[in-house]
Amino acid sequence: MTVILETRKLKRTFGAVIAAHDINIKISSGEVLGVIGSNGAGKTTFVNMVTGYLPPSSGEILYRGENIVGLPTREITQKGICRSFQIPQLFPELSVLDNVLIALSVADNPRPALFKTAVNPALEKRALALLDRFSIAQHAHREVGVLAQGIRKLVDIAMATVAEPELLFLDEPTSGVSADEKMAFMATLISALKATETAVLFIEHDMEIIETFSPRVVAFYEGTILADGRTEQVLTNDKVREFVIGSEFHRTEATAEEEA
Image 1 (cartoon, rainbow, N blue to C red):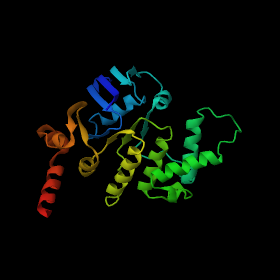
Image 2: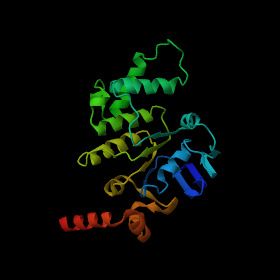
Image 3: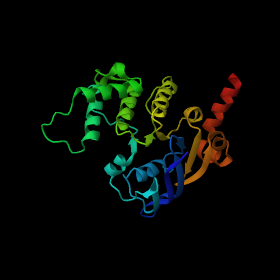
Image 4: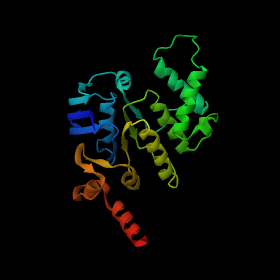
């Protein structure tokens, strides 16, 4: 696989506080990568730096060989790096279809002319096809505000892909999704993204989700990378167990073994 993103010695400080230090990560086309770590470990800081929401204090961010440090967020998005936030960025009073149509219109015309008709049959067809890919077309005409959290998140992530990104960052995609819906939600999400060969990096605290959907894991601890590799190797790493996963994961494993 081709490496599309590489960070070299990426660092971010806030005064005397080091939020991220010596972050070296490579992401290949079509790859699915899970990121774990406690709150404040540097995960979101890393994503914010790559997507242009936070300038690094030092280091390089290479997207297809080009250093994108210092570029505006919109330009980074146009190059093919997009993100979805932990809290969906939606218009709750509008329908699902209207939300996606707005996203498509903005992606097609970043500076649309006033009074120009934005919606047309071709655009609506694209919007419905996108909703179908994420298995939410049946909700097209429902108001976003009345939908379950999992559906709202799928709408938000679908909107994040309207620019057909090559790399998508997801910040805790299953946060707020009920426990009995999480696995189906992630299965739908990953299937939709694999259909377009989009590389995905997602931050997640649920180890069952990580084990099931992420072939590779990066573990953050105190602003540095503690481990990076195949999921089974990272999750059995002694330091990752001690400093990142903790006793909660050990209890989950023990329970699973007893039930087996």
